[in-house]
Image (cartoon, rainbow over all chains, first blue to last red; front, side, top):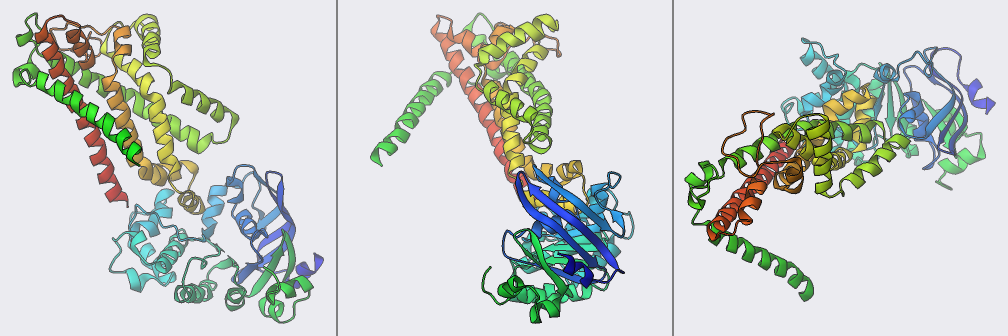
Length: 262
Length: 270
């Protein structure tokens, strides 16, 4: 487990994760994870179902602890500050570390416009003026503005599934986070919608740090700069994406990426 | 299959027959004078206005007491206390309370509201008793409605940096509102039909005035009907039949309101 750490340079870390363990009740799902996530890069987390990859990113924005019986140990630093420090408000942390889920989940009662502004409205931080700028900027960054600019007042759930997922990305971006966590964001989408999200990831990492969980190795290869391979709650290998896919160091990584299991 | 059909048709047929019998008894007495009249020794002069107003007041105040309390309790149990020992203890008790006979609530009302709190045999005491009676139903149906809001939407709220309360207030409650409204209105229509607890609490049976406030003595539709039915004269039985029609129509109106509201909100929110 020492190898992955030396792989990443000491500067430019967004997240520094040390000895992270996580449980659901008595079931241990993460075993001492150590890794650094670099700023303005896309980091992919791959591995078979149930390997703890979703739990891992849910620890990063403290969503893990929302589940009854869930707990964690270890430290996670965001820009050097301990995320689990008692003085850190998880609510404020989550405004810095946005999240997009597996299934698009726009608010069904809200229009496209309301969905994008929902985060700001929920937290009562929507400025009186400048709403339209925030709306247009978030939708443009999510590559959705041109498709929905004439239907801003239509229901968010009336969009296609791919558009709904980009709407959810816009909703996360409107809160102005530093980091965007994506939990298998394309698993409910068709290949064309998937390609749009992947293009989007490339442009988003200029301004944001992206951590994407994916079950598709091709997707990890296409969008990410670094890839972490998880297996049964352990981090097996973590290195530059082109390297992990061309010359993996661990035989288990090789077995997984060549499709021998998973 | 035939047996099941029979099981459906038989009670329906009986019900229709009963309704028909009541309606044919009632038809002679159902007029504006009956709706706007006061009780009288003479059956053909007797009216139902005090009972109608009494029932309306009771339902209104029962709603004011039971709905906010019930929804609040449901939010606590479903959103905050979930899985805790305290919550599961309360849960079991609420489920049991929903099964307690209504006359017991009447005795409780008599002991607590009428005597101990000194409210007397008033609209307030009656409404408070009925509120206790329907509270478990309001809580259970509100919990059901809250539970039906998908977890993914709550997570979406939390991931946007919303607190638990902000998520409930802005997303969960609006989505659960149609279910909460329907459940509450159905509970209120049950309160409207209750007789036993009101008898125990001390609703009057012969009231020739309208209740002029929360502290006033009162009567209610089921009580008035009960009173008329127990009279020996055939004319009063006809009054009772007419009273039953009035009560049934009011309850149906209340249920229709529930359906309309539900439909409306669902359109707005989906």
